[in-house]
Length: 372
Image (tube, rainbow, N blue to C red):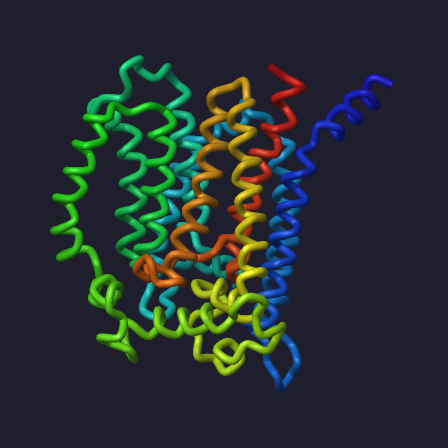
């Protein structure tokens, strides 16, 4: 009887809203991916089949992560981060090169991207740092921020070397969001901003590749190089604009089906959504993302334990910045930096990481009622 009561109580406290939102976004992602990867000759879509498998694995991992307690994730946080750093070093020395970038390692014939898993490592490590001691009443000083900033910077530098500017930027955006929630002096924030601006010059000259610099330079005027660095932005805006209010229809997008869109199953998947489903379909996807982010922040606000609150904020920040930067990039208001649209873009490592992160927060959501 006792076990039945516990099981009923756990089931009653499962965050079903989060699960429904997750499944709806997965359904949207699979629908768009089917069209983006559709082969008219075979009448099949390889990205759709692959992503369906990734999502199935990811959902199982979601359920597994939901079972582990808050204290478990707190204990393994630094170990997870350390393993992530080791994997990033391994990528630089033993990684598989694809299209001139060394971002993957091959394990048993399967390619994985450690930089995606490292996003969760950064979140867990920063949550451990911020929850280990109370934030100063007047905010974090430069000295107090040394450790959390180092946690962000080290993996970002390793990932830039792959090169992968988008993922490195994601680490900084996630960490910066968590830092703001932890509490930082306004003056300290200004100093950090000034230091960051100064470091832009050597980073631009020595760390960025030629094609990355060219993408930034053609951001405001992609027409300057319409067949080179500006091609992605131009074709993407044509696709988004041609979708109009209701879109051209499933499998009817000309930019998509004629393969004018670059990276249409990954970085520019939102262009496919906008072209075939229009403003209405795009708005539905954005609303689903917004509701999921709000759900994550709700868990953060109502958690009794600081560590779980910070992790929830970090996961919300990860999802938020992926959506904002990717869509901004697709519609031409941000430079093309190679950030995918989580749960819609094709990619096993990305999907599995996000589902695992959501599973961890779903577990926190259960335990905020069952345990203090």
